[in-house]
Length: 332
Ligand code: ADP
Image (cartoon, rainbow, N blue to C red; front, side, top):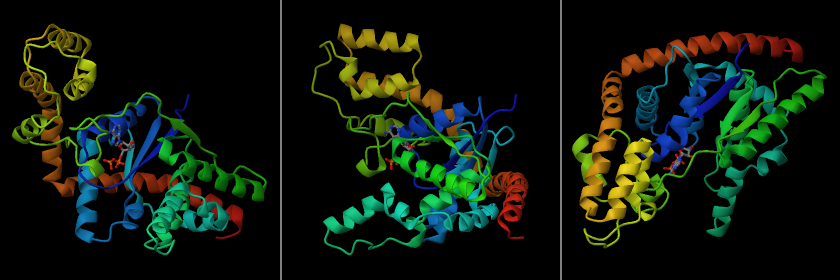
């Protein structure tokens, strides 16, 4: 049986952290076992917010190196750059003709910006470019171009994906046949929020992150900064109320978890020791990925090759789809 197609866009932004790894990267990689998975670096999406060419280029390489180092296999999944599959933009223009402006007005990301502007007493559309405004249409093109069956989404993207389905249905309705496959959301249930150094959600916006590929000395330093309470070494401690254990359990197997829990509960272990245990375990799991990441990021030509090869493969599929669509709609 043919596998279903899953499609995921990767935003080339910022240094990835442990929260991104467990919340986004790892679950997306697990999908590749059951789906025919397509992963693209959404560089034209990034352009809406990122106008510095050096950063945009560097971030693209960093995010590609990150996913490859974490185990994304370009032999097994289709990995490409959005900008290198220009058929996407043919389709986006076509879809614009089927997208109600009113629907874009209601898009969550856009509405949030308008709200922030209004609250601050600015013009409602201050800082909003047309790329941001029409972002759900480009997203729809990314997805529909490949006859995608499912799109793994977090809560924040669920509404945008409904718009993709809506746009596809308008097209199908107009021509009286299924020209575009209507995709389904794949809501990831079992991803937990990873806590940061201070116990809040790990996030770049809170400045409490542990980057995935920190070199070992820096990794140890940052782990030592995890916020703990003031219990003494002797006191028994509650692992479920501890920022160190909450990270430890992400990396540990059952046996390791049980062993550390016992040491917490029986007392006699200080926070310094718990942090050392966390560091040892994290270093062990992260070191091989870090090594791979360093090799990749030091050879951006190789990353470029991987993305270009993937993009060529993606274009074969995309070209067929766009020629078919153009014929159907009376263009070309
Ligand atoms: P940040 O909050 O650091 O800016 P992003 O918004 O760029 O992170 O998140 C990118 C992806 O990583 C999203 O899919 C998001 O759900 C996931 N993610 C981010 N932080 C966490 C976290 N602390 N725990 C679980 N998943 C997270």
